[in-house]
Image (cartoon, rainbow, N blue to C red; front, side, top):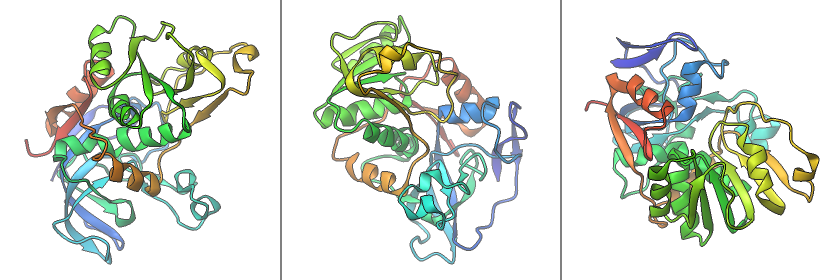
Length: 328
């Protein structure tokens, strides 16, 4: 099979032939149709996170068809499934037993410790294969598997906040804005300063206000979600919160958060992080996304142009989501 392979963190992709994988017990062999491009892939490729296994096939927003299973009763050949970032947990530790499997110390991640979706085939733990909602093509469904799922977990950390600030209006925010608007919340979208196109895009999806990250919104926020991996944005968002509000840091990697006055945190304001996702997150989100009328905006790239897709994402030139289409 053909695959995009990363030999080391901070290295270059190689487009090469690999053996077609064989599923172990409890796994499914999946013919990949599409794989979303995520900022976490950039962190893997750029070496910002370094606990992966190499060589590795990145990509963790996988949409494909089950071709074969090994000792699995929950899946069967021909089923369309999605494979997310969280690819394996032990199922026995205290985290797994207490509904926080996203924190399992033995967890393995798709496209990081387990081969991912920038390939014609992949294998996945059947426990972490999701049925996908009707009404989404393979390309349109791919961004739901990380931008949507982890964005949904970040949104849950905001509780019932009515006025939400989203910092970094990319893949995740363009999905979650639609969901939040459907829930009756008000979204304030913060883009790079001067990004008029991004701000107009945010308004078209239901944001009630859009501006640059250095701008002050017209009212205090109940919660803010920082999707951009920019630590400087955390104290900025904190300044715009009402008392009792929360800043949710949604990424797996972020630059250092600078010092800020305690007075900005006082008033029972909080800063929390989001780590990965749980299967329950996936089941809840995928059950509601169609009802909410969410639609993804995608730019497609062929498998051999995966590096180009990542470079476009790095440069901020993707509106919505980039998706690698296998076999295009």
